[in-house]
Amino acid sequence: MVKLKINGIEVEAQNGETILEASRRSGFDIPTLCHLQLHDMDYENRPVSCRICMVEVDEGRGSRLVPSCDTYVKEGMDISTDSRRAVNSRRTTMELMLSNHPKDCLFCDRSTNCDLQTLAHELNVRRVRYEGKRSNFGIDETSLSIVKNLDKCILCRRCESICSNVQTVDIYSAVNRGFDTVIAPAFNAPLHETECTFCGQCVSVCPTAALTEINNVDKVWNALYDEGKYVVVQTAPAVRVAVAEEFGAEPGTVSTGQMVAALRRLGFDSVFDTNWGADLTIMEEANEVLQRLNGKGRLPILTSCCPAWVKFIEHNFPDMLDVPSTCKSPHEMFGSMTKTYFAEKMNIDPKDIVVVSVMPCVAKKYESARPELTHEGHSDVDYVITTREFARMVKEAGIHYLDLAEEEFDNPLGESTGAAQIFGATGGVLEAALRTAAAWLGDESDATLDFEGVRGFEGVKEANISVAGHDLKVAAAHGLGNARRLLEAVREGSTHYDVIEIMACPGGCIAGGGQPYHHGDRGIIKKRMEATYSIDKSKKIRRSNDNPDIKKIYEEFLGEPGSHKAHELLHTHYVD
Ligand code: HC0
Ligand code: SF4
Image (cartoon, rainbow, N blue to C red; front, side, top):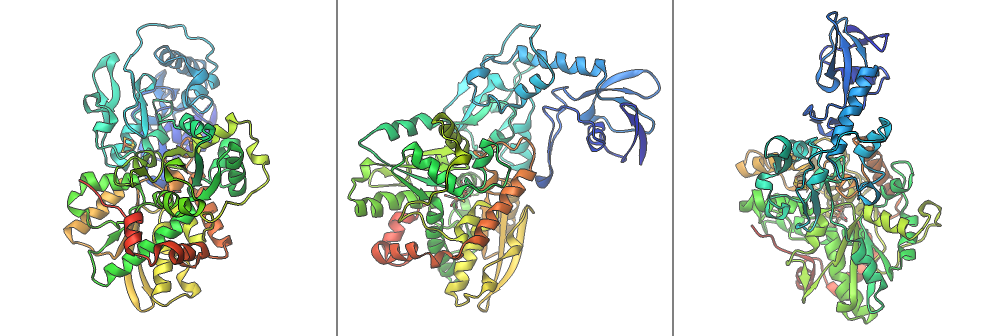
């Protein structure tokens, strides 16, 4: 223990703590900008680049300014977090930062949700005394998922550290020198020319609008205004446990009924559910699991519904592309069924149907344009908007989201089970597949409904499971660094698994790159996870194979899981 003074008050700190940590624990907040610590994924970004967290410290030899994020406590230190000198230093730094920042706050994508803007306001900066040279890097909108506007980059390096240390994709580093320094891909290459997976985790932690999603809102409005089009919308499992945050509700608020009502008011002709597609995915995937366990194909089988993960394995493990399940992801299966089964039922020409997916993910935008995910010349999904873009449309339309009376999804692609809902949290796809696999192996007892061992935030969750006399070793990894380590072990043969789930985003889709910003508070992700499992618990039907509408589509249209028609419409292949 170390005794010191903060703002004149004696406090105790732990050896090895920084002034920032000790101050915050003692109730004295210090503003930060570049610093970011996310405990549940063991991540800390501490480049000491922004100099906003300066405090005044006296150790008996006169006071000096030090960065609190990178200065460790010492016995007898006298710290002032809010002295005139410390506050003036922060303000001046902020003014210098703003002097080289575009002043388009009125229409910036992050306006009212930007850490730089919020901090400038909190620091009482009302003018910028310095104006000089401005960077001019231009905007990279070449990828289908992410916009990179380096003129808004404040060199905090959060993107670099999450991409390198958590995701192990290593896209960003400091490019150029001096005033021209910027955090970008090597040679400032456009993102689509790199091995970026479009997971969007860099977007999630970016404090400004230097990294944002490609905005598809106008394309969706145009489809809705086009009278010749029948516009169908589907919503991912993770959207309903997060979107209410955009309207000021507490994290963890479930707003499924309001979400459906809002989508109807926006003018969608049918409001359906990706969860229905998730139940369909489980039918195909659980069937594939059982086939592989019976010797037809390679083990382990890997889940394939996360497009960032799929892009990652294509780039990094091209020798293992026969390992993932061939199942399309649920929203792609949904799109495919909408443009065939539903089009036939409704007697609408598939070319006049527009499928819009509301997703917590930015990689889904890229995924929907993959040439493998088309049928007879039509993309399965036409446009993907994120949870945030959906919220913007609701605000634009003047809808009071939280006041809406709850409504139900349309049918026949709207009914789903608890198994589908848990897709949104890490481990959920695996658990859902195990429920159905167990039932098909003959065990439909309640004991095969909850597989707690694959839930939670541990980076790689392993479980030995025994169902109907079969022993299975399964694992769920989230975060691409964890996925890489797991796959390397599988490739070396040092470990054996039967089924592995991988999600690119730490926490799963509930923490996707298109979700409401968490601003470093990962407690929000925990609440979304709890909400996810509470929906599952509240559902009468919790196994995908018991969904009556899924049974019906097999009877009426697809035949059996794994049938020729199912393969043609619901499965895909991977390319290196
Ligand atoms: Fe997910 Fe999905 S669960 S990837 O995590 O599989 O984005 O929520 O929609 O498609 O269902 C994201 C979330 C989905 C898909 C589903 C899967
Ligand atoms: Fe890295 Fe993911 Fe951002 Fe691409 S989207 S740069 S992989 S963090």
